[in-house]
Image (cartoon, rainbow, N blue to C red):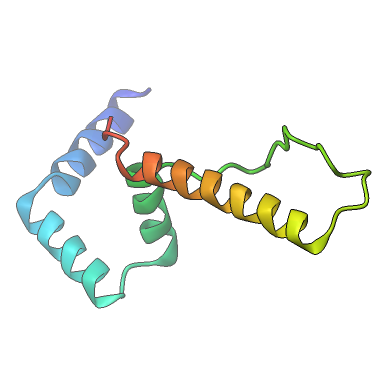
Length: 95
């Protein structure tokens, strides 16, 4: 990084870490006035970025003729696994 660029980065860091900027950002976020990208990035930092793909591990019953009750039970079990994964994300410590 060039010396001039490092100076600009240092100055920007001072601004971003200043109490005034942080309060203004907080006000924009609460008021819903922050750019969508900023809010999305904040969610990713705090809760983690959602997976771009989903890996299906349990394919039992896919080729079988399932009853409505069996499908409902599988759907409920999948929903429970998703809820558990979401609760783990909620308790994930910040880095």
